[in-house]
Every structure is written in C-alpha cells, then in structure tokens.
Image 1 (tube, helix red, strand yellow):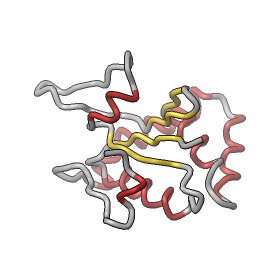
Image 2 (spheres, rainbow, N blue to C red):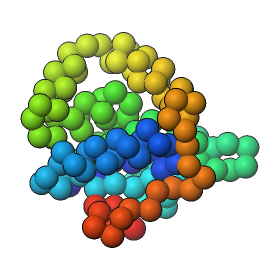
Image 3 (cartoon, rainbow, N blue to C red):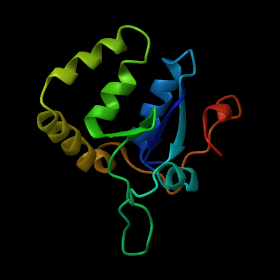
Length: 136
C-alpha cells in the first residue's frame, strides 16, 4: 500500500523533511504532493484547507493519507517515521505520549518554521530522478 504525504510546498523545513523521508524510504512506500496542489484537494474531499485573504492555501500541518485514513500533525509524523529504515522507525514509540502533548510541540515548531528555516516563493519542483515519487 502506497501512502501519500502532503506537505507545505513553500516551507523549507517541510521540503527538507521530504528529502529526509525519501532518503530513508528505500522501498518507496511514500509518494508526495504539496498541500497547495490540486492533487491534495482531490485526496482531501470534505476537508477544506485553510486559506489566506487572497484565497491561497495556508497549510499548517503535514498530512498523511494512508489506507483511506487521514492523519495530521504529530500522528502523521510518527506514522511516517515507523515506515522509515532503522533507527528512525523507533521514533514511532513516541506515540505512547498523549496526542495533545505531541501536537502542542508540533504546533510550536510549525508556528516558527518560516522564521527559523525560511520559505520559498513557489512550491518545490522535484528533481528528475525523484519525480516519480511525486503526484502530478
């Protein structure tokens, strides 16, 4: 079963996380799409994404679409980690902590991600060798 990771395509931290996942997912379990894309909207029917005053999508969470279920924030991160090669798969053990605690930390990092890591003007364009991993 292939899972889809939806991410903020203009966030440098998020783009780095996608590179991290690809490098540690040799079985190509995950595919990817920016939350700002039409593919993300198609995968998330009935789940409107937040928009700014100009009508642009304002993603504030990584989203994992897996087996018909949708996971967000810390739960998405941990479910992704469990599919990565060792030792990263062990991070899934943090699922034992209550979700409100995990999501508090996730939201704190997300709130500061542009200031700490910057943002791009446009969504990432995958390299030719990685293009097959992205939904188009």
